[in-house]
Amino acid sequence: MGADPAVSAAGSSGVERLLRKRMPADVRLRIAFEIVATYAQVRYRMFRGDVTEVVASLRSEAVDVHDPYEAYRIGRRLGRPVRRTLDPLPWDSRCLMRSLVLLRMLARRGVVCRVVIGVRPGETFEAHAWVEHDGHPLLPTLGYERLTVV
Image (cartoon, helix red, strand yellow):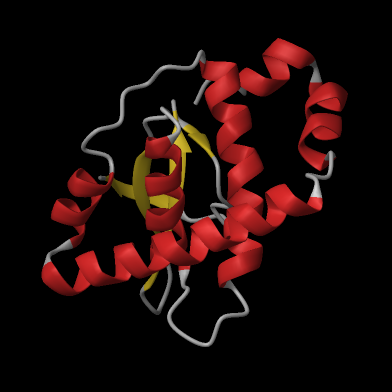
């Protein structure tokens, strides 16, 4: 993987400051509602198809309209609320669903991303999913090794 576009564009301290900047309450609430609504749409699509078909449909109208730094910034800014909103919910909000929700939300905003499925070698099989833009993770990889990209 190459250098992080955010780091190369703004310096590491500038990026961290930008990502920590708190969104206004009304924006946070709107995004939380969008996350839950998107989750319902993704969940419905998952009942009707396999992951490859679902990913294709979720990003079908997406066209990358941002420069790499801006796309990365948008992805990182949305990744955190997606995790925070879905994690405490009582239904399935594991890594794949979080990744698909983020993928759909980014596609609506003109950011084309890929879903990565990774594994962790060892005695037991463990898998994890995350979203990447231009080879840079927007959700935590948790140390898993890339297996496939959808």
